[in-house]
View 1 (cartoon, protein in one colour):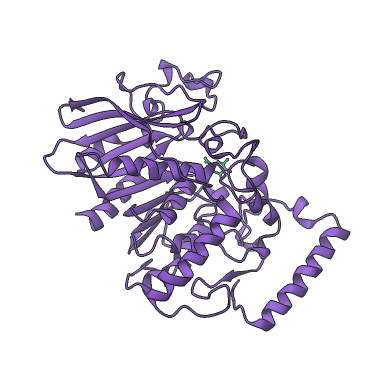
View 2: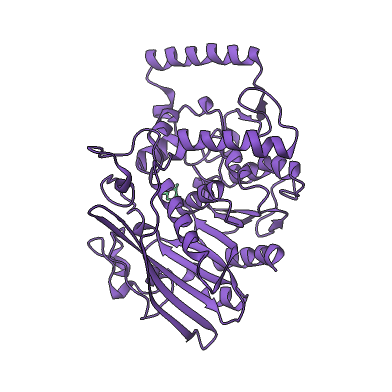
Length: 436
Ligand code: GTR
């Protein structure tokens, strides 16, 4: 059962009493949360209260689009920044761009392949970010999907011309990723998730980057982009400073800085897409950077589209324990303590409004809580409506493999946690609806 929290003074007083009780409880007993089992049965979901996206933290109601834009939106963005993902403590711009190639007759003469590197430099530090683009041949500027890949640009297609990343990569010996480095063997190993020909045929470009070029996905606070902004003697981000998800989101914005200057790309039509942890990064990038015209979250789950207060599948405690580097330090205080959150992920989705947003789940991906992802999209819709857009066109979760598309799109597909051709086909349709 969901109850919307109403921030009246009385409820605030009750809340304080409740917090005190909770603290005392936590001190005197071994916290229930520490031993809490993973819930994957709807019948066992505990009752929870969601904050209303149109009620401000001071209790006032948001009644107009102007109030949303001027007051509520910045306050919500600030909460997520300080309490969950962490702030970027300064600015770093692209130092150099090196275009390695622009080849006009790839994919049987239908596409252009461009490869380039963005360089970031500060004092003795330097970071190279490889960008791979496939675009349909055209005299016009092309709308694109921009998304991170998991193991290197060369994994999305078996094309011997794609440059290999030299960054640290998660080991996967079965495809030839050994000692945290890619080899020739891993070319095309993730091509099932990247239907490049279909994307190009539909009139879209694909721009992809290996996320580890921005920040390798390991709990090492000395690599990646964050150290570029450490103050003297600082060795890790402060409690309210960027974790890896915020770093990856930052990276998407820097790629956008480049795309705005690329003569082949229509930068007013860039859809950012991400699967799983990269879906979390895409949502956070979309919330922060309104230049992204569309945001697509593929099974982003906990810390992405799924509600945190709804305890189902992965929880804050689990994610913060498995991946301590993903979120900012402040987010750890919500481990097993979700009721203390003054916000939830439907408010993150609302930050995308009024831009088109697609949230996708998979039936067998209970870990990401499909229903929690759907409800989040549903409760974000209030902001879309306030801004004169449809939001999600349904109130109840649609059947499996029956996508729905308002200004918010949603589907739950059959099968496992993955980015599939079916998912892409829906994203292309969704993009057609708004970009063509
Ligand atoms: C899981 C993690 C999820 C999700 C996933 C992925 O291990 O628990 O939150 O991000 O990884 O990125 O594939």
